[in-house]
Image (cartoon, rainbow, N blue to C red):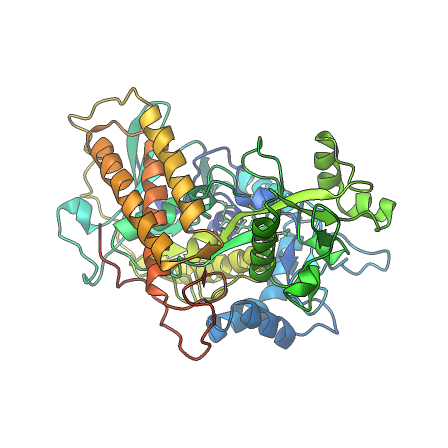
Length: 537
Ligand code: FAD
Ligand code: SIN
């Protein structure tokens, strides 16, 4: 068993983990753990871009207002102000690190506009912005002598007093993180990595649902780890469904058709070619995502069709191909020429607004544990995330986490008395079907009962079905030699449970959480955010 000691343990190699690592690496030894290849992240698949205030007529106040409006007034205004007013600086830093955002002939950035934005403010690299960011950050990371990356290593749990035999519950004060237990799937060994400071940057949880834009790594591991460690998790009911993923039942995860294409003039239509968005919102195809996704869901229910369409046929052919080469090529590969054919689209699970509760320096409720990126809940997004605010949030709060970590880490003592992971008596589970079938069932339950439109009855049914799979999976976990798939299933169930419980607790329709039992949103009757009131399993 390997035992490693570092100053900073970073779990995740997307924009959140990498940008933090680059900032702390000049001060101490950094180890980045990533469960797949380093670039296999949601970051790599981001298309539209990163929102930031760059030029007039845009202003910080306008971006702040758009963010709060999209969030249905549930965002934390102080956090929104921090994120937006620091946006320009963070974008300039990405450029300094080598990210190449598209420019116009004039030399100014070519800014796009997406749903809910009142100005053009989305910096992009064609329609593959995330891949460009991931490339630039990894290039810098790989040449830094203080940073080690362990690829294909899976973090099972963060280490706290619980692992020293001390009883920890949700009311315990001073729960402290000492590092993490990490599985090497090749050897089946679980390593103990001790750290002064740990950052969770484990990304989202789209795999909880059957149809998602998220890569397979998005299984909510960090959120589940914190909840198991009795840390605070909040706002899990706010799942963003992207309105336009390419309809192709044979492809998982679903390919995203960026919202920037609607910003560029693409129009949503039924299969028969009728525009429908004006029935739902005066902003038409560029209304905020929750409204567009619900409208599409409704149109599909009315018509019985499996998809609606995005029509780009009226747009300038050359410009369309120049700005959206990846989408053009992808659609062409399945026989759709977007300059001549409408693109069949359906909504898919895309982003989780809630997660590990953190403060303005990304500190979680567990000491010496920070969380940034999609796994964290800073309060920026409220009940719905404004498009392209996620890469921005990751950059801003990883920066702030780094500032706080650099100041504190020298005064944090390493704990040498942490025991090795105990795998005594565990047996190898030879029946993969026990895991794959349960995963399909969870995804089906969540898609059918906890999707774009919910009800009290559907949520209750989902909870009862999930409880059965939870018990079966815990039994398996308690006797098995650990595998990545088993741990991921366990985390997906945990995240599903948190989404359902928090959706049940929210007795209103708000932002991304829409329930037919509360059809008329009550703006002044907010329930407080914060997820610590949930019962444990
Ligand atoms: P990720 O980039 O997902 O990285 C997570 C990392 O954690 C991975 O390295 C993974 O291997 C690792 N990890 C997870 N669990 C474990 C574990 N147990 N052990 C070890 N490692 C682990 N946002 C925007 O702002 N603009 C966009 O244009 C945009 N487009 C998007 C398009 C798509 C198709 C998708 C899926 C998302 C898009 N988003 C966009 C959202 C945005 O990309 C993500 O929210 C953001 O990239 C998250 O970054 P992250 O660093 O938090 O996580
Ligand atoms: C998109 O390009 O439509 C995705 C943007 C985002 O998720 O922020």
